[in-house]
Amino acid sequence: MKETSRFYSSLILLIVLNGVIKPFWIFGIDRQVQNEVGVTAYGSYFAIFNLSIVLGFLHDCGLTAFYNRQLAARNYELTGNPGNFLLLKFLLALSYMAVVFFIAFISGIDRWDIVFYVAMTQVLASQFVFFRAIITAQQWFHTDAWLSVLDKLLMIVVCFPFLYIPSWLGGMSIERFLVLQMICTAIAMLITCLLLLAKGFHFSFKSLWPDKRVLKAALPFAIIILLMSFHYRLDGFLLERLSSAAEAGKYAGAYRLLDAANMIGYLLTSFLLPYIARHHSDGNMMTGVILNVRHILVVFSLSISSIVIFMAPWIQKTLYHHNDASYVEVMQWCIPALIFYSLLQIYGSVMTATGKINAFILITFISVVINITVNLFLIPTLGAKGSCIAAICSQAFCGLTSMWYCRQKLQVPLDVRSWIIYILAGGLVAGFLYLSSYLTINRLVVMLVAGMIALILLWLTKLINLKNWKQYING
Image (cartoon, rainbow, N blue to C red; front, side, top):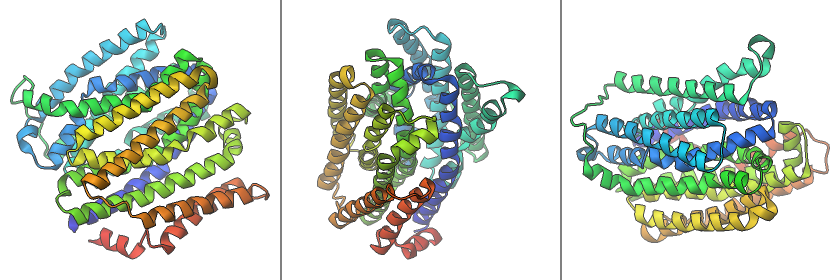
């Protein structure tokens, strides 16, 4: 019960911290950078950024997910030499940089400064995530909750003067933004490393030669990282290559909202995976945690999707200072994928934590094939909207199939009653938003009331039981 209490209290801290910091980063800094540098320049960066994500499996090869799961499960036979993992990640980082530059060259990309800054930031971010994976594997969830906002908090501090007080340090350019991002990521990584050392975690170097057993065991995780990178980020690169940088920039503006909303799911499941890896033998404990996380994420994603679909013109005008109909349409088609992202994050984490990695690879591979096929078919005619449709199709298959697999093989209940409540919550929020469109009510108030409707329904139906959560937190 003590570990369950620590999990839930840390979960709340994680949500609060990221609910404060991440929106300010995304809408106050990242969005403002796009407005400052222009859609085309940002679209070119977005394409290179997506390429760096797609190739990201090379600088990690699944080592982070593998090490996190094995350390959480107390399998010290394969995790007893952490220094060896660091050395291996350094060698992988060198190969990653080489491949990124090679792919950029054959793709005709000529902004080598952007390629370097983006690739280097990805290497540093990968190491930052590796150190955080050690922390969550040790079940130090409170510590990781604070670290989850560290890099973005640093970026807010250093970027704010350039964006909002340009007379002081000068304006913001895409090059300056990327340099600052690289520096802040490096600082966050170093702070996390020092924190691990202060907590007594030692990076011993027993051997400079990688353990073949580790490489073999980590291979499935590397495949998952590769497939998920393709699934999440290839569309932005394909858009820029098959359509235009302007279409990629249009998609980037809508994807920013999806990425922001999806961050909550990513953060919650970063706790969920190591927790289940350690406690999956206790079926009741595991099921309770999975369903509680699902209740939060699915209702959240349905509410956010409804808000964006009905309020897209106002959101587009507020964030990007125009409400061009084509941009609004892309935003409305982009956000529904969030619902299936949530399912994928939950049940994909469950499959990974319980060792059902091969089945997850197969499901993800089929999803990637669906995504690429639909993108290639729709991008030439529909542009950014085509990528949105491709994401909905592939994410729906991946999320629903993963959920079905966990029900069949791991006996994780579907809980049909909760799905009826999800649909009711989404319908009530959508109905309220539709009616409010005919009223002269402040849009921020409308968004707040829509969120309250969903929360009240969860409370009335006891999907979120405040008494139980209080017991979880207090132990």
